[in-house]
Amino acid sequence: MASTVLRSCGLAAVYPSVLFSSKSQFATSLPLPSGGANATSRFTMTADWMPGSPRPPYLDGSAPGDFGFDPLRLGEVPENLERFKESELIHCRWAMLAVPGMLVPEALGLGNWVEAQQWAAVPGGQATYLGNPVPWGTLPTILVIEFLAIAFVEHQRSMEKDPEKKKYPGGAFDPLGYSKDPVKFQELKVKEIKNGRLALLAFVGFCVQQSAYPGTGPLENLASHLADPWHNNIGDVLIPTNLLP
Image 1 (spheres, rainbow, N blue to C red):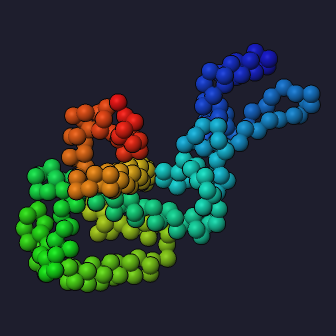
Image 2: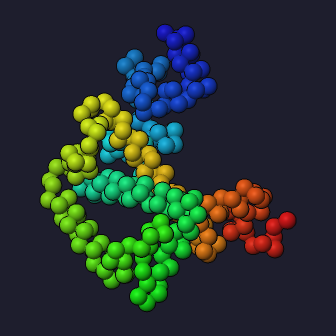
Image 3: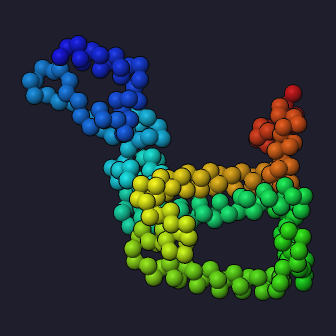
């Protein structure tokens, strides 16, 4: 027994995540020697995003992409937590559409995403997509079409009472039948939320870059950074230029 405990302690010292990870078989309970014969020490669940930090009890790891991250404890109320899960997923999907939509036209030499919206500031301006005029492409017409389309979709989604179906409706939204295999479906849920969070960060980065360098696109910013990484970086924005070498 003593040698077993010593080996466990040595393992914990070298690889603490093995014992303290929420996915570890040792994370539930581990008897330790003590003055009392029945004394037991119980390791609490720890958050995957920061090993050693406590995992909130309402984040049990069952949701796709749940790594125990909620420093502001926004999900303590169950109804709020479910709503936040749904909202995050919807925003992730919008971001995954937006980021390629910002990158592809610039990569094709059709202007960046900032230039693409300049027509809206011109009275009677005509919208274009990939260089081609958009039918009914005046700003008032597009706003009305978008408002009616989004209102219809959101109304249909709000009528669904099953939280899972609201997030993963299936049917026409799963033409390849990925959801038929439960194991594969669960894996794809995690991949979707991870890629969606990456897209959200990318979108915020594009907006910050454009604010720092008005009129530029993300690929132009990337080329500028690669040409002179020492000077063209986030420090160039945060630190006054007269303090840089």
